[in-house]
Image (cartoon, rainbow over all chains, first blue to last red):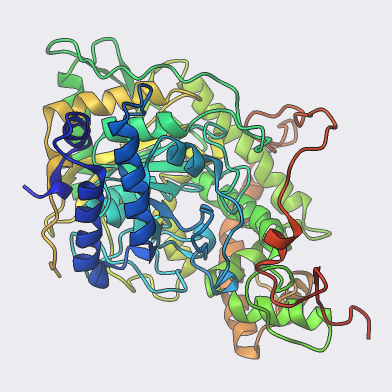
Length: 491
Length: 95
């Protein structure tokens, strides 16, 4: 068994016993990246020298008996290229940040560095996290490890693919409308979108500030939970970060009905015509599995689900139009020269932003413009309240909501061609969690006839990540979808 | 709801985007289709519903007005496309 096949608990045990060094573990992952990433293209930047130095430092700390060593000491990590890491480039998948090297590190990343994690590099993303396939990256698409002709999902496609291909055991992503959960589902890995405000957004390049969250990828709920716990917490550098203590995560399961007493809601609005039949069947089978583990299944209704897409595609672009105004060729990134400052702005932005980013900036600008603000942005904010209330009401009756992550499995690269609206429809089940600010956890529950992974998501009340992680952990102890390994080279 | 070319040009001006004629037409068609879809929000009566501007609301947290270390001018200028005498160098604002 290769070192890259070790589960996190296995690696941690060997490291603690001194039977494995972080340098060896890191080297194994760097070698796997070198062997596979030419075809997969999960990474935009890999710094082998820096990673091995960090690994060496982790080994040294372990040798001198650091008594409060984090369980993540010496474990490799891949970071989505929308999170800043000092000393590494940060492109956000865009040409407008080509060559940019941030002078600061994102709080979430810093906390993990302080815990002794080894940063392997930065992973590919749709430009400014806008997209559902990683096809909007200005630096080339990432290929799904389960079938290279298919997308890994997006926008955190690079991180999901890196974990699925075992190039990194853990990875960070960001989720604004599903960008952790959907690629997790497409790549057969586990991905957590925490409650809004649970993980600091300082150093996460802003796309939709009221929707963005930093998320975690791993090969199991347990591994994702450990990563999440190490980076969650209040941060004075993020004015929206919440000061709510994280409960200790308890992975012990009691007997044959570990989910006894857990109430799971199945929302009818998420099981509609148009879902790929195999996706619906796999999700329903997983729900039945959870019932056999003791959970009570209740039908519920999230009545405003159908409005999530129009609400999101007004609020997110509106916020993005403001957040991306800073990219102007003046202080960072490339500058397209012009006679006047106006020319620098319009030429740099016109040339360097890709199509999707340009579309969303324009949509958002329109939605916020004089005469249209109330009808578009204002109305969307009010309907957002209705969507948020739907969740609050349902969580008075159940502890979690179970549903598909996406209507389909990973589609082929190029499938949505030049049809942005068709791409937006991929997000219908993932957007609501961002609008309501609730946590969502995606994990594998099967494969379709073409061998592509199918994921399910559990959504919970605000600050309810621990419960979701436990439910998924119980499911993963009784099933083995999450243990399946992609055979490289399938087309 | 269909956008006109003039409206597309107005939006591009507001957003400081220089677009080719092809791009203007392509975006005009695509944005019109998207706006058509989002128009369904008008179906809902939201007269008595407050807007959600932020998930947990609340006032912005304040801190004591004490200076603390920040990034240096050198660090901040390191990514500048053009600089001179520790300042960002830009073309004229006015003609």
